[in-house]
Length: 359
Ligand code: ASP
Image 1: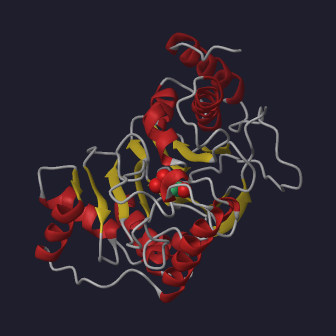
Image 2: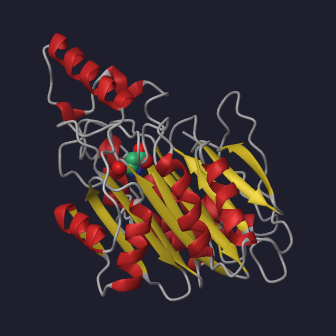
């Protein structure tokens, strides 16, 4: 059995691989999954940097319209990247066909949609989040208010909802008919199987790629300024009150203009346990290229899940990150195949198949 690397080995490994990758501005040490048309991640001159167009990266295929909205916010003028991120992720939040973010998201084990979100700016490190928020269409906008109008960072549950209502956000039922129907099916399937508990995440429904398409996390960069936003309905059929990584600064996302930014998607418990996004940003601060920084964290997560027994339910979890360093280099990597991200450079957006961490 292999022992997980200690902290010194971890930082040494990412530092060494970063030096090897810095010459070409991309990382190629991780094998692509079969069939993936993975593209290199060049350092386009000026993207995200002074004189260049904005750089926008976000998770999954719904990142494509989200990036478009972020870019539109930029083109409307006077936008810090945090404004771009806030505008961008509201697109999947409002899309009823997306079962893992906002309106239309699959509910918790009680059939209630509970939403997690956070937002952060890399210049001041101002940040805000909401967790377990009910009845609000745009949790990211509430997270932004937490950041801008309170001295706090994270509001949860009924307190978050009351804050949103006091701030003038309208309430609505976030459970779509489609989600309610799927919830009824899940409950019935579980009863037929003789039922494990709803939050155990063992059911075949979780392995359906159409149902597990995850959180939107976005990173935007312009003129060397960075921001990130993350928003999700979280793990489908979760225990009521469960909070994932997405609203937690340092887990679901982190950004510091002096180092870079990272956001996650996948099994949030593993990302919280590894302090994933903060670890990636810190590795980049010490010189690691983005994909190498991600790889080090994913390796640790894989070791933790396979050899240390922390998670009896998720022995082979999907976890993926995207990251941007202070030079505007982009990285992305996943534990399992199928992860895609939307990349906007020079006003053009492409959907990229991310590499998978080598075995
Ligand atoms: N990370 C999210 C959570 O655990 C969900 C996901 O991205 O799949 O709540």
